[in-house]
Amino acid sequence: VLGGGPSGSTAAMFLGKMLGKERVLLVDKTNFPRDKICGDAQGRKAANIMKELGIYEEYEQLEGQKIYGITLSSPNGTQVSVDVEHRSKPAPGYVHKRMIFDNFLFNCTKRFATVKIFTVTDLIMEKDSVCGIVGKNEKGEKVEYRCKILLAADGANSLVAQKFNLNKNPPDHFIVATRQYYKGVTGMTDRIEIHLVKDLIPGYFWIFPLPNGEANIGLGMIVKDMNQKKVNLKTAMLKEIKENPLFKDRFKDAQPLEDVKGWNLPIASYHRKCYGSGFLLLGDAASLIDPLSGEGIGTAMISAKVSAQVVAEALQKNDFSEKFLKRYDKMLWDIIGTEIKANYRLQKLGKKFPYLIDKLMEKASRDEKFRQRIEGMLPYTGGRKEMGEDSFLEELNAI
Image (cartoon, rainbow, N blue to C red):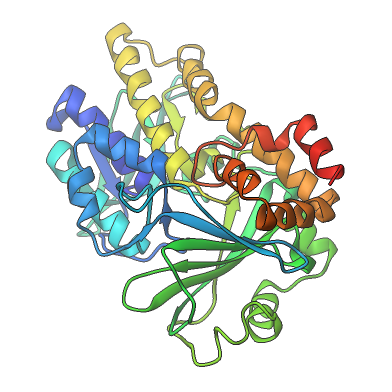
């Protein structure tokens, strides 16, 4: 397994449980803890995977913020707060800094799999099939490892995806996002905040609460839209903080804890090939980020679980051919495909008809039953299909 982030660590844990620690090797170029630029939120998908692995109770003890709902605002500034779970029940989501969350997963992996710090420089190929990796260990010595199959969980800039030319997303299927940690932002609750600000639709500005009075602040936008509108994300984010009536008072005495940082997110609306002879691509390396929310941890961990199931079958049949491994793609998209397609449609509709978002929020703000309906369709709830249906859009248009 190449890469010790959420998808790599999760895959190594599932495989280690099935095959034994000595048969699964996870390599990463540097040790944890380390920062990963991200919104830091994890929802039910990630929780369900951790429960299957038996590590959820430890996860709950990490320093993080329990999340019970979402506060949304529309382009005209209408705000609505919705809950996805009652406070008497376990939290359906958390915000943990990735420095904490990734370190937790990586350390859990050491119980299940062999873990080494190792910088991969190239792949070993035989008969057009991946059969190992070449690189340098911690001492700088050249080493190679042979394998039956390679799981590439090495992120958006995946070496393996690049090697096989499987790393190209068009600009309308790529998000660029910023992140900046703050202290002292007022008005935070146990809900994450997603603000669909007027000039950046279908992108959004977020405020995610963290422990100790900190918050993860960010802005994400489709690359194509960003280029067309000539938006500088850092400038746009700081402008919203300073001038937007929803935020300016809340940030009046707040202090940034770091410089604004940026990163790229290949989104799953562009269904890339994620397999080949002797290898599978997981998580960001397979472009599995949600096109509406920008959340990638849940789908990354689902891809890890599915990859482990396919590897177990491949080992049983001793078949690591591209033809056999194609089933990974089918199994994965059978699970995530319906929601990804619905969310992509919503993303496009929000861009084309921003007034519908205003109507949605206005109706939810004054109609309690409608607001409760919306609760089941939002990011981190696992729903949303109904919101993209023609009947729902006709209902909104009629308001």
